[in-house]
Length: 85
Ligand SMILES: [Zn+2]
Figure 1 (cartoon, rainbow, N blue to C red):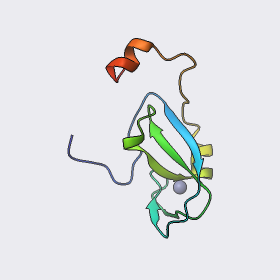
Figure 2 (cartoon, protein in one colour; figure 1 turned 120 degrees about the vertical axis):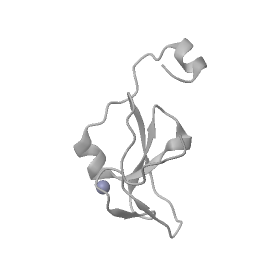
Figure 3 (cartoon, rainbow, N blue to C red; figure 1 turned 180 degrees about the vertical axis):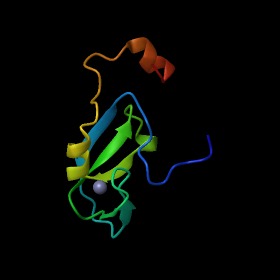
Figure 4 (cartoon, helix red, strand yellow; figure 1 turned 90 degrees about the vertical axis):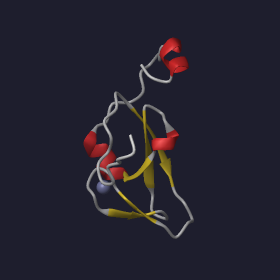
């Protein structure tokens, strides 16, 4: 897929979420509310199905409100080897 949504979080079965704070003077667009966020503020990285190449920066409070599904407790080894479930 070459067409990419710039303001929406792409659908995934689960999301890896980790807090991040960068010292880069960059701004990102939160995929949950569509507003900008500053890299230097406390925020989180959302990786659809743990895929960091598709990670998005989002507001901490937006992620908390969205109640995104977390990673499965025991991911299938086969699906991990295949890259998709
Ligand atoms: Zn937001």
